[in-house]
Structure formats: structure tokens, C-alpha cells
Length: 79
Image (tube, rainbow, N blue to C red; front, side, top):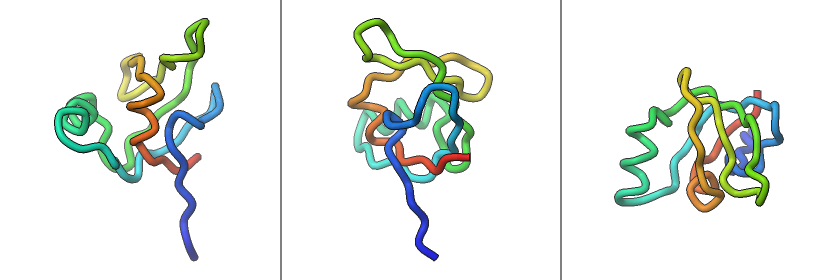
């Protein structure tokens, strides 16, 4: 059975997902890993800024704001 992943920036507010793959390279990848975005980490979309970018996410007990450009490089599976 083929698994379907979607970019984190498409996760609807109030929904949760699990990190499956990081497609980012270089310093962006290092930053995302440092924030705790490793495989099977739960992430919840909390709220958008008034302009829609960045979006606040609940990650490992902290609220982290990520721009859509960064969040699009995090592939998740909804839970």
C-alpha cells in the first residue's frame, strides 16, 4: 500500500501530523532538525499570522513559527 504524504504547510489548522521526510538541504535542513523535526515527531498547526505566513506549529512542547517556504520542505502524514 502506497503511503500519501503532504507538505506541512497544507496541514489544516487544528489538525496533527507526523513528520515523515525532510526534503530541505543545507542550513535549512540543519535548523529543522535542531527544532526537533525528526521522523515520527508530532506536529499540530495552531494559527496563521494575519497575512497567512508564517504559521505557528506545536512541536515537542514548544510553539514554533515556520514560513511556508520552510514548512513545504517537511513531508507529513496526517493523524
